[in-house]
Amino acid sequence: GKSHTLGLQTDGTVQAVGWNHAGQCNVDEWMSMVSVAAGWRFNIGTDNEGNVRVAGRFESDSLHDWREVIEVAAGDWHVVSRRADGRALAAGNNSRGQCNVSDWRDLQSVSAGYLHSIGLMSDGHVSCAGMKAHWDGCEQWENVVSVSAGAYHSVGLTSEGTVVAAGSNDYGQCDVRSWQRIVAVVAGSAFTVGVKDDGRVIGTGDNRHGQLNQDSWQID
Image 1 (cartoon, rainbow, N blue to C red):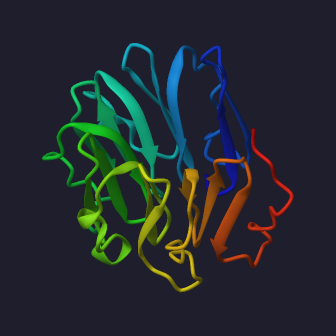
Image 2 (image 1 turned 180 degrees about the vertical axis):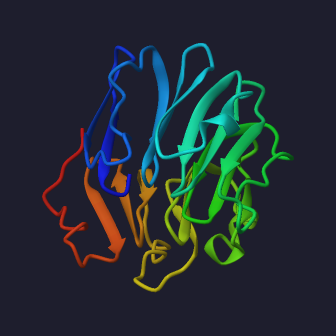
């Protein structure tokens, strides 16, 4: 999240550390969870029965009818979820239309950025909602197998191990065209990190806080 970290354990319990001013780290009673996500001042998760839990500063009443949820994603002030039937649900701040996902179908995964949301379909294409400047071009992507929304940009991993990106490139966070043999990719606030098939980690974008100083990282 903005100033806290959330972790899902193999036994379905959840741990949280960091700033807890809004109670976002009060997740000790969460059990049998299968997906969790951290927002600005809140956490959201879904359990193995499709029920949704929320901790922190978020209007939980807007989620009262959410059922059969198998994946959740959190932006700063909105959330997007994937249902078992492949459809999407969204709630929270919709100032740029980032929650307009009711027509999404056949979802494989979802991700939420600052003012936008993206969803990956089973055919390898992507649907987007919210501020267009943050995702403009995503809907032309093909053969995508995973997606990640940053604050102002979005990235996708293709089946060929290459990476595509769209949105703000003020810090070079979208300079991923030359990346090859990638097996995982994630978008941060203004940076992008990828894992190569040999376990090495690469990154591009904003490094003002040393967030890309991972030259020695090796992920097995």
